[in-house]
Structures are given as structure tokens and as C-alpha cells.
Length: 534
Image (cartoon, one colour):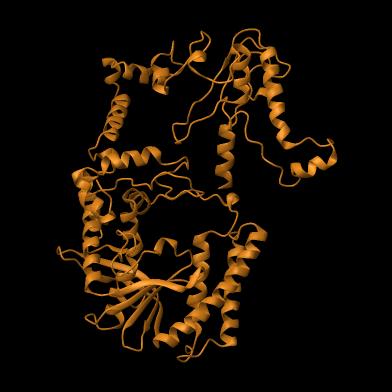
């Protein structure tokens, strides 16, 4: 990784050609100080771009600098420095000066505000501090409606690519015969339409090849998580599980323990703790002090391993996370004792793995359309209740917010929550009578909200809903349907889907494409499953 990063930096480096003061000089406004210029172009004159928003110094904030009575410059004073540098560049230019204001960003649903530096210039020229119709009518003002308009009306495109695009816009028959341009035009037209094409994830023509990886293939076993992934976003399923693409890890950006690693700590700790026990507390009795001490000892070892691998994040945040884990697992043991007392639960198995090289094979789930799906997985815990029923428990280390509406009437959450009914089917098959009555299935939020599990009884109605959802999912994978379905654009601190938003700049265009494509008849069953209106 170090060699690859170094090579990329060396490839990106550009040496200076010629002497300073000759040719084209590209850089910040401060770089133009003391240089005689023939012409000047200033790009990005929008608030937040130039000037950039001032960032306070984390070690010595402006509030502290003010106490020194001017001995140290304030960080916010850098805006004035930028302004002076810009005025100096104006003064050093003998010829034309061109100022550019980007009105928006093609990848963001926002509009830019003109820079205060630009408004100063407009006010000096017109006496008005705004860009209005009168300003746009001035001879020195050029309004470019869009990128395409600017490209189509440029006096001479600066690159071969822009020259080809301009010829394509003019419908020049010669450029249409260039294979690269023809393919590009076909892609753009297909994605702008409402038909579900190969450019949008329709891989029906590769059905024979995909059949070897399909869940309906007798040689293929699949997890409930992967089936949920297709329901959430078929494109992400295709990229991750069929093309085996993964996001690039950036350990230098790790600030605190990730949710995934936190979940791994919890699962590993509880698995080892429960596996070591000779017996569980008697009904109605709490966990002993010795058992609690052993749980904390196992947790400390798991945390030490994470820290040794450099996954804990910044030291202060990691120390707080460790303290929280110990306190939260103590709360989990309190709730677990109450649950055993109320239900008479006797734990039959923990980390019950099937189809993963253990004693149990993959579990077959027959569908009403004649297909069979072979499932692999691992059930966190299976209990036998006092009334004879089985109880399936799946540990979650995150928040219960996304699970708040789960109930017997809405068990699958539009195909996004398949684990409980699938695990209930597996538990009946592996540990009990396959024709036994309903199974209690619950998500336990071990860290965030242990006293409020979410779940329901898996009975014939839930099994019918599971059958319906699995038929849609399996049929969609068999048919090669992998459209991108991003979440509705909005503010978020995190990237929800790295496959729909690989550059982290938003999903506005991708979401608009999905709104057009979801009306395609091929996607009718999928749209009905996820509960969206086409």
C-alpha cells in the first residue's frame, strides 16, 4: 500500500517547466505577488471557494489569539490576506482580467453565492452590489447558461475530447462514425430514457453466465445478508458479490472505532463467553460476579487485539469506547437475566453455524415456484422457552432506529430484513421439529438498547411473506436485474452506499436515473417488493 501510494504521488507531481515569469503560471492568488502578468484569469469566485471558509486552529483558537493583543494573527484574518493578494494580482496585470463565478455544482443540489471579492469589483464598476439583469447587460459581462452551452459556443475547444463532444452536439456525421463517440452517445441516450438497458444494470443477455452464481443453483449457497443486499440495492449486490469490488481502505482517516469493528468485538466476546460456560444461571437468578468478571476479561482481550491492529482510532476516543463497551455489556447481562426469568429460556446453542464447514449443512428453503434456495449463516443464539417454543436471537451492536417499525404485520421491511424468518426456519430444521409451531425471533440491541428487543413470532403468515420476497429476489438475480437504487439525496455525515456514490459527492444524478428506470416493466416485481410507486 505504501509503494502504491508513493507511486501515485510521484505520478501526480508536475515539475515546473521554464523560469518563473515566463509562460503560463497556475496557482493561488498569493503566488502572483511580485510577478508581472499580461493576462489574468481568476476561477472559483464563490463564497466557500474563494475565499474559503476560515477554519479555527485546533491548538490555538482565535479566542486565545485575541488575548495577545495582536501579537499573533487571527485565522479569520486570512480572508483579508486573500483579498489583498487578489488586488495585487489585478494591479500587476497589464492586459485583460477575467473573473469567473461558478453558479452551481453539477454534482450537488446547491447554488453558489457570488464571492464578496467579485461583488466588490461589480460595485466598483456599476455602483450596485449584486448580479442582476442590468449587470448581465453590460458588455464586459458574459453569461454562460450551462457547461454544454459554453462548449458549443466556444471560439475553439482547448482539448481533443471537447472538440469531439462539440462535433457530436452539432450532429456532425463524421464524428458519429468514431466508435468511442458512438458508444458514449448510446450510453447517454439510454440512461436518459425510461427503458431498463444494459447501461442501467440490465444483464439479461448474460443470464447463462449469471446462472452459475444464482441462489437457485443447487451448487450455490447464499447468506441472508446477501439476499438483503440485493433488495436494498441490486447494483451494490452486483458490484460487491459478483464483481468482488470493495472500497479502498484509508486507515489514516480512522478517527474512532468503526461500527463494523465494534460489532465484531461484541460478537466475538459473547461467543467466547457463552461457549466457556458450564451452565447458565438458573431461572430467576442473575449472573454471578465471577461470570461477569470473566466477560470483562474476554472483552479486554478482544479490545487489546483491535488496538494492536490499529483499528481503535484516536487514543482518547478509543479509551472512551472501551469504557462504554464494558458498561453496556453489564447492562446486557442484566436484561438477559430478566429475560430468562420471564420466559424460562434455556440456551440450546450459540453461534449456530450451518453450511460453513461445521457439523450442520446449508439449510434448504423451498419456494412456492418450485425453486430451492440453500442458505448459509450463523445464528447468534437459540433458546428453548418454558412453553416449548424455540427462540432465535440475533445480536446487533448498533442503534435500533432502523428496526423501530418491525412487527408481525411488517416483518421483512420491504425485503431489507430477512434474517429472523430465515434463522427461525434454520433453527426448526436443525434443532427441533420442522413442523413445530411459531418461533419467537428477535433482534437484541446489545449496546444501545438491550431492554427493547424488536421481533415477532414467525408463523405461517410470516413464512408466506418470506416466500414471496425470496421469489422476487431470486428471480431478479436470475434475470440479471441490477439497477442502482440509491437513497433519496440529502445531508449525511456518511456515505450510505459506496457503490452508488463512489466519490462521496452525492447521488442526485443516480437517484434521478432510478426514478426514470423504476417504471420499466422488468422492474415491476422489485418495485412492488420495496414498496415504491412506479
